Image (cartoon, rainbow, N blue to C red):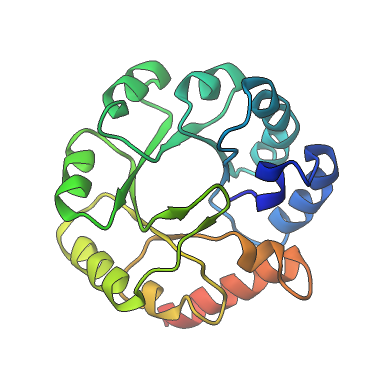
Length: 208
């Protein structure tokens, strides 16, 4: 997930571009979520135009948050819907069958199952806290939910949380298919590239 500075305006996309490139070159990253809540369409378009090629040139899916219309316009690979109940079907219709449409399930089992039945490509468990970072969750509750999902469902799960390389082991062990990370990469003491490498090492260790 893009860092808080892009959402607040404290970090210019042009300045962020080489930072992103270095992070994505550090290891196997599945996707980049551009999340700019409250930003104008022009701000989203500019950020997408600068950052999308960096991700896609490295075979990293580029997703927009909650704006399937802008995802189509900017050539994104898909969209992450924080509230899928009103627009998941419409987003799929707009984006087409080959694009990624992910849905947030929060911590509600029924809501997650409905989203999967409606064709979501993944279900994200957890919550965003304001405009920047996923909210800290009860690790045991989140692990229990993702463990339940992995046993029953084939739709991939994404864990939302304020994860660090040191704290992600339990959620990986119960079957989370993907982690959404933010400050654990961007604020890593040795830099974002080191953050990506540290997460990948922790994930690999947890899966052994």
